[in-house]
Image (cartoon, rainbow, N blue to C red; front, side, top):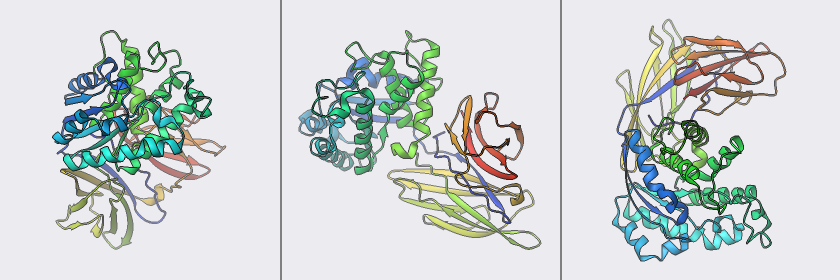
Length: 432
């Protein structure tokens, strides 16, 4: 199931609270045709083959082609007959675009002249010949000890951290300017090094990837292309299971915690909603839906459980709340050449149980694995309860050190209720 942006729902006093659970019913393809245009960072350890093997182990299929000569830049690919011919073959789900490893780390003025125009030219060509596909920008990593050859002329690249920050910024701009997703390999690389400083991701030249680094990149691309976690996927035989799991877990945490930052659109966007209790013997609820969060959603149609239907990016209707407290809505999302159908179960609970403040607490990572950090400036005792999406209590206690241990929970969506200073707050999170 594709991972979705996790939305916080504000529960209002003296009205009915709206909780929703979204499950994707179908139409998401598991075969992807991908063209890789890059250089040695892509060619080292045969990155496309690593992605193919990861996909196969998860029941998915990757077909691919590539043009990845050493040192090639986006500018170089834009005038390369082989690259342009491959793009014009069409039929690509994604065309991966990777600039020369140093260029995007240079000054914004340099990037605006030497990278961004060619990212645009290549992207426009991709959209023209693969109208159902899109570019996918390959955010690379900073060199282990910075870029010594350009340090004197541009000090931000003197260190790994400075170079990485510039690469991140430039690739995100490429994605934004071309309405395209970014495979955040460099961001995962940074996070993994922070958590695993003794693991070597670099080749001996302190620039190119070791097998560990290429595997991290491959797992990141799998998540970006298929919108699935790589946890539990295939690993190289020479790599320990513990290291593979650590890499896979970091990829899942970094990618799925910030889908909107990387512009990774799952095309199955859960609608936002609000409800107001209109009273009566059998309570009436005014439901309003909003599906404008998708980055590139073309149209939406709504099919209500009471037989009514609507279309557009927002819709509203009045429902009689059933005795069971559940209403089913179906939303059909169209984007490019794909359609996805979601089922939303609306479970109405008494609002006296909930009062939520948007910024009182923040949760991360979300989705999480063994631990969920709960940050707040509140200094007193915080009690917590964790409910399944159907309202069953699965865990409760006192929040200790702003961390919840959720190892024993099964994979899935949960509702976290926090009580602080006599007020209750509610949030959603996903356990992987």
